Length: 143
View 1 (spheres, rainbow, N blue to C red):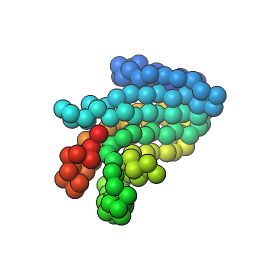
View 2: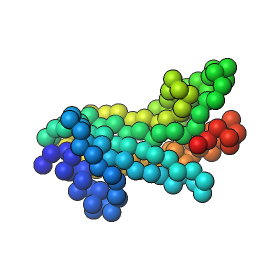
View 3: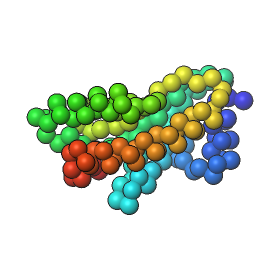
């Protein structure tokens, strides 16, 4: 069984519904995380096409925004500290457009339960991260 079908089986078993799109070289699964009463975070899981191995990427998009270029250094210090102290499988990133996102990338070898479990871990990290971001930069930076 290919890794995509294995992942689909896990999603079905867990009753975890995601929008699925097939692209030339990968499958993309998109969903939304209700991170708090006020924050809905878009996320995506991509799996390269392959029978028993491939590359998996999980991204939680638009967590916050560095709105002023002059604040970029403070954000980068926060991100570096967070990655060192909190980044288990994931790393926090600051995009060129100022948007903050959380990313995981790994090669997978047929054990797709690990991908599902890592997605769940990411959801928990996002919820904690939003509190940390709000405490550090204020609630207005959070999408």
